[in-house]
Image 1 (tube, rainbow, N blue to C red):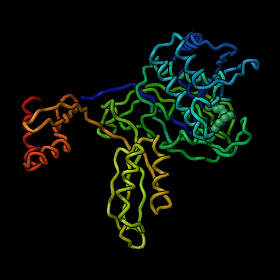
Image 2 (image 1 turned 90 degrees about the vertical axis):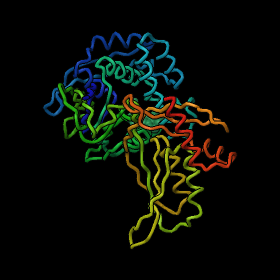
Image 3 (image 1 turned 45 degrees about the vertical axis):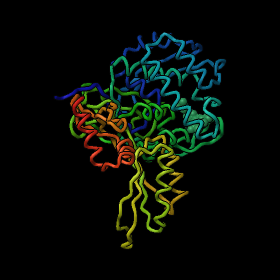
Image 4 (image 1 turned 45 degrees about the horizontal axis):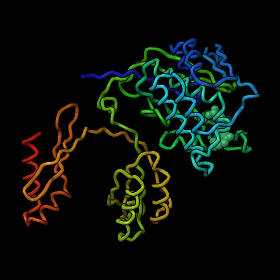
Length: 402
Ligand SMILES: O=C([S-])c1cc(C(=O)S)c[n+]([C@@H]2O[C@H](COP(=O)(O)O)[C@@H](O)[C@H]2O)c1
Ligand code: NI
């Protein structure tokens, strides 16, 4: 059966910022007057949301500009912003999305500045305009019932921008931190085209990146304008539509699907003794799997490919372990999607002890029944029975109850 989900595809040929995305969502159908009413639910004052239609290189786009009174340029930390969102009367789903984006942004800043999360004062990021952009985006996505966000490769721009620290490179350090696992390129425009807020939304909510997903059918396009006038139309193009689950984008059928990274290094000059230690360390920092493949690499050298499957937030720790513990001085990583069966555990009693059994199902049908190896091993050791027989007995017992 085809499953259809509301989705957007963001064509980020001129990058993405918070106000570009919110402008594009308004242009695609989220009503501006409702946005104002929702924002009024936040205990934040001293700002004005200016909405206008502008021409950007021949494309008529929605431009959203938040004007903040000079007097209220306060610095807020994560707890302050979370409290403002929590104490509002926004819908719970909008609160959750907003808090997730703000937290992701704070984590990136904390990493860059080497500070504890709660000590991060958001500077520009904490200014009212960012709160407005983030909450506005969370509200508009909910209003349009968007379930999946896809985006093209991002043009991030190049050069330097001025912030309170002085000059920082583009992509800004927090942006670069947020873009792990998301494909991007500088392009030939010397401006900051992807901002930390734009990157935080994609890092928090993005389902997939690259070409428009197979099975995506658009029904409307919205354009959100960026601030600068540049050599290309400075707009974010948002395709609003539906995605139909197919074998190519099966993640849409399964809410458990997430984005992960495969991180790899080809190693030709390391003693095999220490792979076990490295694998243990990688699992300890959150790797979901680690595997070794014999390969023949450059100069016809027999070597080993070390592969790690991990969530994007493990990338830094995995990189550190690979570069510090192996003889490799480089590694590569790329995003992958996973399809997951549902799992539950039952416990069955055998005369020698209990065995946990993992029952997996996909789309409501049982697809695998597996007695836990460690439990069976203990019983085999205790009883003297062959391990495979213990496994068979446990499986038979489990099959009779499931
Ligand atoms: O002031 C600080 S700490 C600051 C840090 C960073 C880092 O990347 S770290 C970036 N910036 C710049 O602030 C503006 C605002 O970004 P929004 O996402 O709120 O639009 C942007 O130019 C960042 O590069 C400031
Ligand atoms: Ni910063």
